[in-house]
Image 1 (cartoon, rainbow, N blue to C red):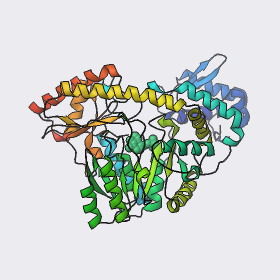
Image 2 (cartoon, rainbow, N blue to C red):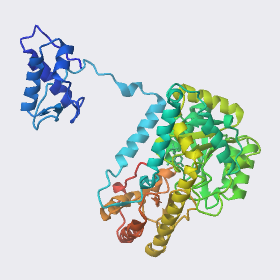
Image 3 (cartoon, rainbow, N blue to C red):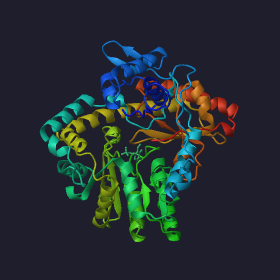
Image 4 (tube, helix red, strand yellow):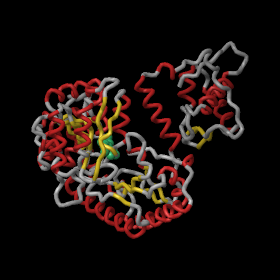
Length: 505
Ligand SMILES: Cc1ncc(COP(=O)(O)O)c(C=O)c1O
C-alpha cells in the first residue's frame, strides 16, 4: 500500500498514516472486513519504523475504525458513528463526463435511468415472486459441473488458460453441430461462433449490421434487452404484432412494403414473455416475406429444448432455404446463465464479419468454461439435466395455469405457454399492471409489468408471470394473492403516478 508521507510536516508520521487510512475507509476504498497490511510489511514499504505503523493501527482500533484480532491481524471495521474523516481535496474543475458520452451511451443511460426510477426496490421476505425470468438455481447441477471443470483444468489447463482462437473450443462446436441437428438445424462446427451468451450475440449483430438511423423490425411483445441493444446503436424499432401463432405475417408484409428494416428480430420458440411457439405455416410465411424483401431474420432460439409439448418445433434456421436467418443459441436457460455461454450460426458472408467483431470486442469467450461445458454435455449430463428441469418446469406451468383458472376473475386472460419460463396475463380494461405492482407487493406477490415488453410502452394492461423459479407449492398462493389485488383494483383503480416497472430478464 502506498501512503504519501510528508516528513517536513509538523504532523507525526503515525498520525499521517492513521488519517490516510481513515480517508480510505470513509471512501469505502477499504471496505469493512478487509485485512490491513501487516505492520512489518507496511513499515517496510513506507520506510518507517514498525512501531510507527503499530501506533497508527492502535489509534484506528481505539477510535473504532478497525478491529484487532490476536494472532490474525487488524481488520477494517468501517467509519465509527459520527466520524468525520479528512476528505480528499476536491478537483479544481471536475471533468464533465456526461458531456463526453457517445450517443449510444446516452441512450443506454436514459434507458437505465427509466428502469431505476421505476424499479420496485428489494422484494421483502414472504413475497412470492413471479418476476424473475430465470432458471431455478435450486435445480442447478452444481456438483457435476464442478467435477467437469476440475477435470478439464487438470487435463487441459495449459491450453485452456492461454489466449484462444476466437471461434471457440472445437469439441464444443462439434458437439453443438450435432445437438442442433436434433432440431433439424444443419450447421458445421466451423460455422458456429461461440459468444458470451445471447446478449453478446445481439451486440455483435447490431454492431455488424446497424448504423444510427437504421430501422429494426421486431415482434411485439418481445425481450426488452434485445430492444435496448438495437436502440443503443441508434436504430428505431418497428413493431410487428404477435398473436398466438407468432408474429403476424400480414403485418410483417405490410411493414416491408413501406419500410426497409436492416433485420427482423423474433423468438419463435418458448417466447419471452408469452411462452408461445410459432406455427409452422407462420414460420414459412415470415421466411418467404423476408427472402422476397431481402431482409435478414435474427432468430433468438435460446431455449428450444425447454419445450413442454410432444415435439419442439423446427427453428426458423432449419427451414431457411434462402440463407436469411442468423440463429442465436444459449446455455443460459438449459444450464446456468452465469456461464455466459451462447453461440451464433450465420450465413457465411456475415459469419466472417461477426467473428471479426467478436475478436475486437473481447478476443474470445473463456475456453475453460467452454471445455467444462463440453465435458458436461459429452457425458450426456446436459440431456439428463434438461429432461429433469423440463419435467419440473412443465409441472410448475400446469400448476400456474390451473391456479389462474381457479383464482382469476373471468375477464382476465393469459397465454398458454408451450415452453420457456413465463406466460403473459392481460388484465381487464382500465387496469394498469405497473400501477398495480405496489399494491401487489404489499399483498405479498411480485410480477413484471408488461409495458417493458412493448416497443411503444403500450401493453400496460399486461403482466408477465414467470413460473420457473417459484417452488410448485407456492404458486397457487401467489396467484390467490394476485387475484385479490386484481379484484380490489377493479373496485378502486390505482392512480397512474404510482406505476412502477421492474427491470427485466
Ligand atoms: C428471449 C431472451 N433472449 C436472450 C436472453 C439472454 O440470454 P443470455 O443469458 O444467453 O444472454 C434472455 C434472458 O432471459 C431471453 O429471455
